Length: 326
Ligand code: SF4
Image (cartoon, protein in one colour):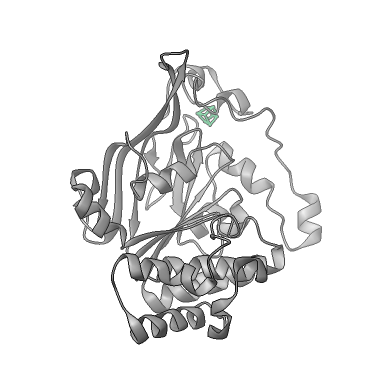
């Protein structure tokens, strides 16, 4: 089911990867990377998706882009159920949905010039030729605040921040309406991170884009996100407006993550309580029964070990999955 206000609707999404063993590669288990999640992204908004590594956030983004086989559940893009598209229809649809990678260096072909990297999707989708093609590539350089004369340079001749700008321009080259930004600033220096986030915000405004912005750190998504979803071990445990999440976090996992985010005021920062999460995230092959956060939760009670808490509405757009939150 989809809503006209939503660009993306994800309903009961599961992505389990088989674990195989032996000569016959028999399946012996599943990695439950994404385990039954539902959410939406409104047109023109940025949904931040946050959690520790291995929680399923990157897999979620790639499921929306239909980059795996074996996706279960429904994903609607602008009202169209992607799982029902034929390969050729999906190929055309993919133009609307692009990905910005975490590591700009690894994602750029070192043998191609920056101009060819940015222009390649234009050629693949047959969007322009000749002078029109060259004009479009030059315009994409300007859009991401690079000089068009840099077109003939190769990726190793650019800084980390400039390489991420090339990755952004490549994603924009096919004029998408939706972009999965998969930890786009995690590999960059802090001083460059702010510049790239400002650029992404400007582009969203100017080009009416919608983002899924993935990060492992709540401080990174704070300014850019309209709403934030927190994931833990394949499930969404809390989702709400960005301001509400930072002012009134309800799930113990969100509270712990937020307690690690530095506060600009050193006096407040020194005196507040930090919650240290002990232990690692459990294996997604055999998640704990009940609430899968219970082995690390300081507030766990008996029911947490046996019953899975449902994601429940706490008023407005605030949803939380915790037995203790009423
Ligand atoms: Fe902690 Fe229980 Fe809430 Fe899970 S349901 S977060 S274990 S209190």
